[in-house]
Length: 297
Ligand code: NDP
Image (cartoon, rainbow, N blue to C red; front, side, top):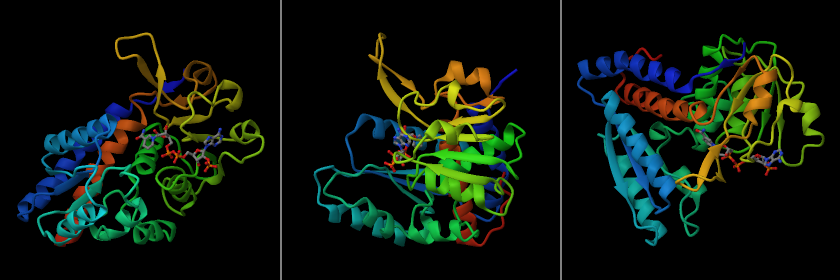
């Protein structure tokens, strides 16, 4: 029987388990606070931000919601980040991507105080992750580590194949898999749009992470028997329903399920974990900033 990895359930258990750390912070007089900054009128970005805020409220993290007109000067965003860096009541800062074309996303990420960079995208935090001394693991790959662990899969010595090399998913995922640490020690291959003979690479994978953003590009023919398949993709495709679209992953679920020993669905797999690990990083950040030792899940 193939295990369908329930990301909603694993995310809920992470949220439940964060209560201990949040209580420890409360005992020391601190409430974790996450500032979300939205400079966009894209409905998907608005939805992501509002979901992150309601997640915060559910676990007892304060959410500070800052909206910036997408037509405003880039300086407005940098000034906002600078104010949040200086605000001692703010522990985590998340600037929702993408930002408008006239703003440099790279410059924004560098402007965030690395101690408050709960996305883990600041170069200092990227460097620490690569060096095996992660401060904040980026939320999506960290969530994937937790999902793989929840399925009872030990990564040590396994062949891990990551399809995609973005800064937010593919690269940090590969970096976590190669660390000499729990959830790592995998022999890791990173594939991308220039990879020759992708199916030959994916068929080698004991653990396959699909993060290309191409609807259902991985099918059962590309997967080894017994593999653990993690589908990161969230793609809108036209559908004959009220919304006019549906969400599909990068993995063709039915044919892949026949081969895999465990697989994440879309939706309900990686997505909820990305959100849960943001809460985790915000709580961790609060402990680090106030020098309070917290027990994290
Ligand atoms: P990017 O577009 O930044 O990166 C996609 C990567 O996939 C690139 O490295 C690209 O290669 C590679 N790629 C594209 N097409 C192919 C192909 N045909 N064969 C092999 N490699 C290919 O995407 P993200 O990493 O930001 O996101 C990936 C997907 O994950 C998206 O669907 C996104 O919506 C989703 N996502 C989901 C999250 C969640 O929480 N569930 C969180 C973040 C993202 P190259 O570098 O050569 O261009």
